[in-house]
Length: 394
Image (tube, rainbow, N blue to C red; front, side, top):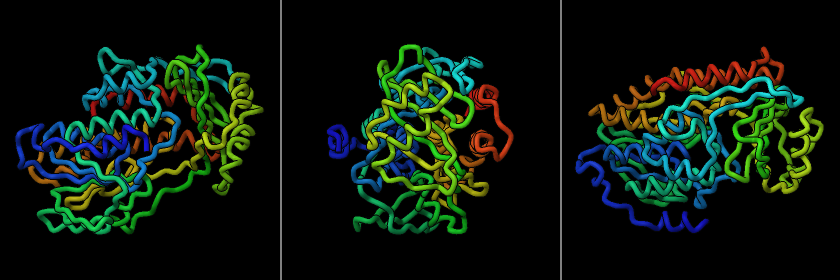
């Protein structure tokens, strides 16, 4: 584990009542210390709620490529109060360029600024984002435990009694499952729900030195779909979306060769030129793309779900992590508005459903178009429409 993680987990969290001076605030357990769970911890601590976070991975590992954070996410991060460290850890830009497969520029889509004085968008490494959110959550007073899962929980009506995998127990006023697309909390809460579905497409990611001309998100139409995302002065990551019928599994040692093969004949000279630099299979991040949208309830009593546990989107609009950060602000806001935890959780779902449903289904439409299973979606039009939708208040 990196030193900052060891120091963070070993750090004694400050008095959790310090943020508000009100020790009667509902105590909240957050299951999952990913982007959504950490953001929820920060937002809840801002409003004075006692928070404990558990994470099943004892190493708290995050893969080493990047993530796109768009204007609505910058606004949300500013509201979380961690914007300075966040911006300093990434690469800001104010436009998206769309290219034909051969590299001819089709459109430049300007992106709105929603946080005064800050970039419209950020490309940031996932490890850097984890550090910013993790340090901020613990500094705010959240208690973090790694290598721990929930063995059992019971909503008694006036609290949730929890038994953990390390043999300890706890009683909380509310529980939030932020444990991702394969959420065990979702399975326990709604065993009748189906899990995520493979779309037929996968994504390959790799880090490269950033050519100086790539100063924003560059998106290449066609199949495979390709995007270049700057994360710093000297680094960008490439994502490549490809049809992968049958959801194949690859030998980890073959991943560099497999990714090279998917772009070495690309019509764009710039994209094609990156292929020879894909040499380390351990640095290739390969993920089958799966989608999930829970149409019904997102909570039952005092236990709620957020983020990918209820609205896992494909990455075609770059909004997955952003939706989770927005979720965090809204769920904290609703808990502060309502005296009853169950009522707050229902209000959270009511505020979030329409926006999340739009992103999940619009992203999936782009995916299906690339696979020839639906109409081909124009990326410039889809991107412009998305920016209009997510610019609306949360």
